[in-house]
Image (tube, rainbow, N blue to C red; front, top):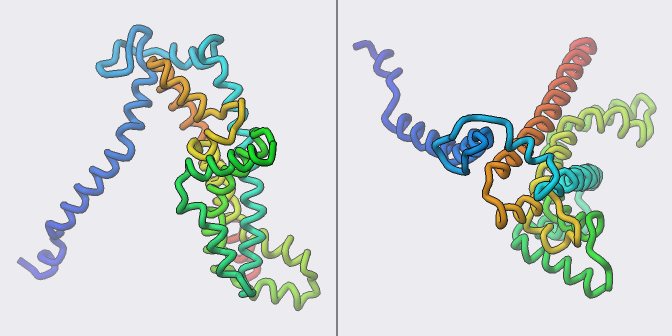
Length: 281
């Protein structure tokens, strides 16, 4: 047999690792697939296999009055809170990323303080924020204590992502703009932000999805109004119908829609940048 044919043969480790990777994918996405399938259970079906027919009755149940009446309102709260968290995370992360391009006294300590909340148990962070509001005599609410609790979760990830994006930024573009007479605001608006925009969109999307799905830090800081994850958890303890699976399918569809829109925007920005560079070249 020729040597080239022998070298093309895959070793046994390839198949072992491929099997391990396949098992990991099954473990990761198998439960999600089960939920998606069971959400189309028939009217007389339950929460286990085998399925008793197929229908959309459980999706209609989500929007009907009764036990599920609070879900649309909780969904609106989660969307609103996620949007605010996303905007604040982007603003702070971009400012920090630009500020940390130059070393300054205490920069290392400030960085570790900013990301220290990642190593703290989420429930303890929420418990501490709730106690702090109680000590100050303030009422926990959606856009005060819950907002702060979720920022302790989204900001470290936003900082890590923004630092990685800024570190790849070529500052010669800013120097060229300065040579052409641009001031600091013009450089930021017309050079820095447009180049960093795909990374900024990624930070915004990550912050939104982290906030939309957050439970542990929110449960002790939300006050009397629940977000969607808290409302779903309350339903799990009192209801075991396929409606819960329909809720999971709908929320996943919303997440995938937001991610798809973000990816399309990033791809469009990259194509436009490529055409611009081609014209300049």
